[in-house]
Image (cartoon, rainbow, N blue to C red; front, side, top):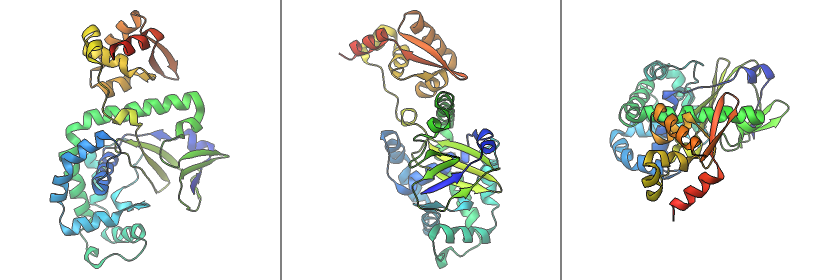
Length: 317
């Protein structure tokens, strides 16, 4: 299995980070594999897969297939974040300006062998950047506001897990095969790779909405890209019609979603409602005794009371 040796200082200085480029690369991976992990991904694929395939020429298709292998993503296509949140164009510039000779070396690593003759060319970084920019502009940017809310909500949830159960809880199910082994060992996947000592490095955790992940490192920076919690990225459950007539659809939806504790940020991401609207619904539901709240570190989590459970179940009959 692959694991990293992490010292206390590296863990203490680690941080969560939102990356528009990581989100777009994750969408590229989803388009490349053309398999959905849940209905939300299926709907997105049905919308964008035909246009993506039409956009690819033979060289681009070969490039993507070589760069996105099941066990490794070519370094030039997924650069490690700097540690600060940056605009998409700033992040993409790292891909576009990547030295062509190094891109070929990266492809040899991802392929585990020689690069096909048709890919031995100097324009690979530019072609990759053009393709990623197209995906961002057409298929990601129009929904970026909601995607960002979902990413931020996941970070809130992970932070709450960290506060309640320590790093072992925060790492649990972050990505397939990942878990805290103790004694400074962080298992990052189930592959039989040599251990890597990242003590003294800068460790970042980067959520994405597609159900994909990857690891990368560069110049003492290490990034773990992981898929958001399924409850955030799957389509939100609609409130039963009868409950909606009683409470109003927006307020009933908030009540339905609080079957599991959630923060205000998560509710905003899931419902698409504004922060003020969600706050007003929470106050009314609190005053009616249908929900309660508790603090988890810096976050406040809301959850249904037994009375709220009874009302929600009654609305489904």
